[in-house]
Image (spheres, rainbow, N blue to C red):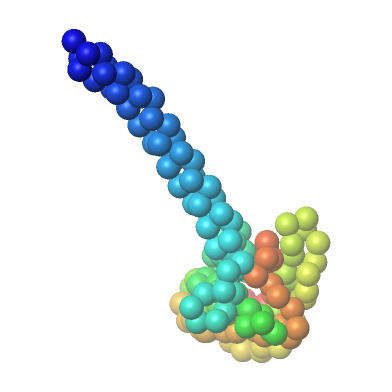
Length: 153
């Protein structure tokens, strides 16, 4: 009978300890996941660059028949580089005479303005790889890009 009572007491302790351990492990996993995900945006990757992974910033945009896609923004510790593909998705040729990229923060405040001096005719369905360097500015926290094109169709 004493063995039976001891086993019941032991079982009650186990019933209390096991859920407490599970709760503690879950708590630490959640904290670790939140800490890791909040640091991913600003962490330096294996290649030594910081990346802007803000979905609003790197989303595909269409302006005056030209699509800006595959947008990437990196920071090397000194300068930011914004690279992208421009595609003429219309059935007509588009003459592009310069364009501006206005980079903004979360509060819609202008961080910088990039004036791209490009004059060329984009044939229908033609794509071009472009890149703009911003010296001395970290744009990895930028929230949005406003594109202003000077085109003739």
